[in-house]
Image 1 (spheres, rainbow, N blue to C red):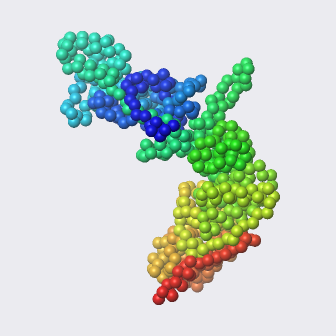
Image 2 (tube, one colour; image 1 turned 120 degrees about the horizontal axis):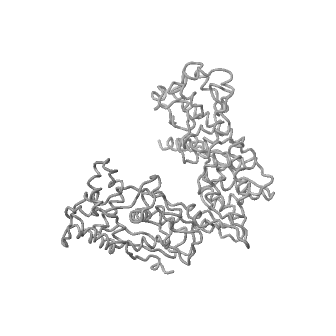
Image 3 (cartoon, rainbow, N blue to C red; image 1 turned 30 degrees about the horizontal axis):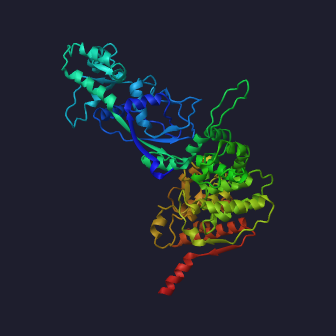
Length: 603
């Protein structure tokens, strides 16, 4: 299709559009967000129509693709199980306005407002106060709750109820469908008294003219891929939540359940969202909380390597769009097992209790692909693989090309081929200067390493700090600074130390109770509270050396204690990594030393 044919502006009468919606000529895909229905906004919408102001275009996507749809809008059924056409019309933008207009004219139900009647009435006695009138609409357009006086109990409504009884406040739908009857009632009312030139009759005619003649603008798009819908939806909903490709695939792969017949067995249908939610609900792991997109991309990787000719060759939107229901069904059973093994590997082999500490989200894809139909996984290899890529000086798993390379690397092990790691390189200064970032790769790697050593509490030294998953209540764990950033020592010696106290080398996992006991006290003071053989024995579980305990015993801290402490912690981390990467060529560099040497030469 030529690009110039992809967008077609058009318009349609307001009531014609709503009638066609009820006739099921338009669909609302399930990826559309829930509407927020407010009385005031509905009144303003109708005031714009009343004044013939533009409402903004409604975006319609025309396609031959059948998606899962909302069954109802405002309580009105707009689709049915057997709905089938050669071309579907999906409302991409305009659901909010459509819901408001539909329920105003035809009534219905509003979610969360049980018993509320959304039918809109118009008070024909309310005049418009000039071209800049922006207040009278509140009294012109009314809901039944603003009219019903409950036999005089609601005093502000008594006058409106009287006008309603006289036929001067009428339903909008009656003006549309029964105009002659409404006009006759108004003409014979006491207020009008059969005066053909009365302004109330003129107001009634005006509103009838509005309903008959107001036209809504539409922009129809055709010939676009499902993946493009995500970009379009996001750009026209800048203030809202971006549309995720997961929502599109859910709608695209949906198949309704069918009943058993004399000639065919019942089909339970397919709904990807329920499939993943059921997986989450029937298992126990913090990693089950990974995003819907993560699950979808895991599936795409598995499909790519295990379903011939699927067309799903990558994890980008372009290829996620190619996922079909039969692809998912073909791999789902074994993928579930592989994902559970992946989560178990993170939690119980690496002792990382939360997805917040996984340095690369691509690890979900590569490790699950490795476990898929793998009867004899090599956990030692996986551990080396994880730490090698988490700490390597280069980002080795941050794009889809690298993803494919990693899967090929691990597949060698699945195929019983020899697997060799390249040289491992790490910059000591990146460790020294690393600070906390919920999305930073090095930050997550360091905190994951701390967790992997299974740190013990300083006060109750037989207690593992990270046993309870609730330790991580957000993407920022409850971290303790060994040299508290607001302690007297840090504040007095901040210019005598090269490394900031915000460095992750100054972090330890502690229970909330122990952390509160320490608060901002000087290490010399609080370390004395824990100075016992049991505490000294568990210091390695935090990758800590004993020099800080020695300083506490001697009652003095060097002016550059933070630098000395951090250097010791860096060396402990490197020693632990060397142990984890045993057999891998391990090279260190130090850009801080190179920088200082260059400065010395320059002087």
